[in-house]
Amino acid sequence: MLSDEIGSTEVDGISRRDLFRKALAQRLIENFELWLEFHEARNSTSHNYDEVHSERVYSVVLKFTKQLRLLIEILEKRGWTHAP
Image (cartoon, rainbow, N blue to C red; front, side, top):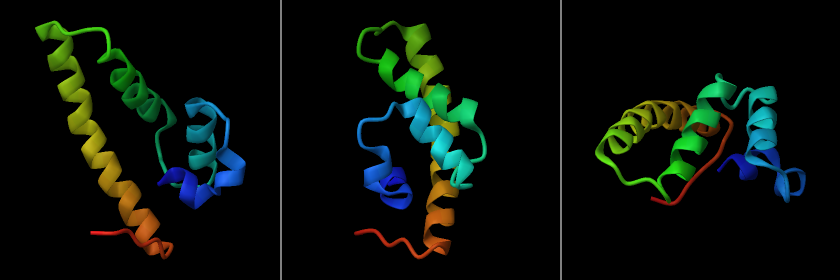
């Protein structure tokens, strides 16, 4: 989604951190640190299964869904369409 809007040639082979910086520069996202938190929470789920960690990741997911909806609104205003 972000790479489609920014341009795949600009994002091929770059880190998530750089992708989020580009998205911030293009005003696709508003909070760079929050998107890093989403990415770190996602990465942490592959090795950590305890209940406390799961609850923390769940709270991050709740924030992510709100930010994802905002991103979709921005993209749609810019003419982005997606399959149902």
